[in-house]
Length: 270
Ligand SMILES: NC(=O)C1=CN([C@@H]2O[C@H](COP(=O)(O)OP(=O)(O)OC[C@H]3O[C@@H](n4cnc5c(N)ncnc54)[C@H](OP(=O)(O)O)[C@@H]3O)[C@@H](O)[C@H]2O)C=CC1
Ligand SMILES: O=C(O)[C@@H]1CCC=N1
Image (tube, rainbow, N blue to C red; front, side, top):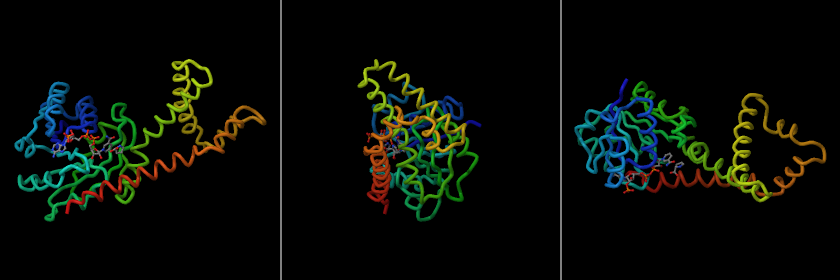
């Protein structure tokens, strides 16, 4: 089924979702509309993907859409967009990707909308990574699933966990990229050429993840296998244990979750 979608906001995240959905042919350039207040984004999206982009909303396209996406930032005027949707009698599915803003905040007083809230993972281009999804009773599962499945894996969760999902799971690639950079730099610091260090770091990351998954063992058990008595691995382990390695990651995740909550509270939509 080809979906007709319309997005308010055509920034980085919407672009990544649309690129994946176009690739999977869940949408086509003719059935994908976007409005963005930035003329540069409008021109870029039109030139790159040949989708229907404009600075002012195309209300005919909105009214014909199966799914409207709210792709703006929490700080943007998403309340006005919701008011306009009510004024234009749009009553089908709304998919919000706005971090921190709840289904209740998005719902109109008349409770007109079928709302799905999703925190998309940025690993859309490789069709991996879990997006956290919360939906109200009205949401049309078929329409949403076709679209969501085109850019990764879907995890339906309780809304009370969505901010944690955002700061931990969706910001997840950030922590991994940081680890990869530090690990590669460590190899270079020890004297290895950067290209080779990069190759080894990536292979270790991929293989260690596969080993944990395929063995079904706790990573601590696998650590034991890698650490001979008085050897190399346990010497490295001792330094890691003395460092703020674990606390650094834990604190970063807590800060990201806190920031997600703050962003939602700053703009309540009252
Ligand atoms: N990037 C990510 O990794 C993820 C982002 N998200 C969420 O996705 C949303 C978008 O993030 P991201 O794509 O990174 O942000 P961007 O800043 O790249 O995109 C937002 C776009 O919306 C435009 N815009 C602002 N207000 C309006 C409006 N009223 N009508 C039309 N367009 C408007 C902005 O224009 P201008 O810049 O000129 O203001 C900008 O081009 C956020 O709510 C974020 O929380 C969720 C998960 C992951
Ligand atoms: O920084 C952001 O807005 C998004 C939300 C989670 C990860 N990145």
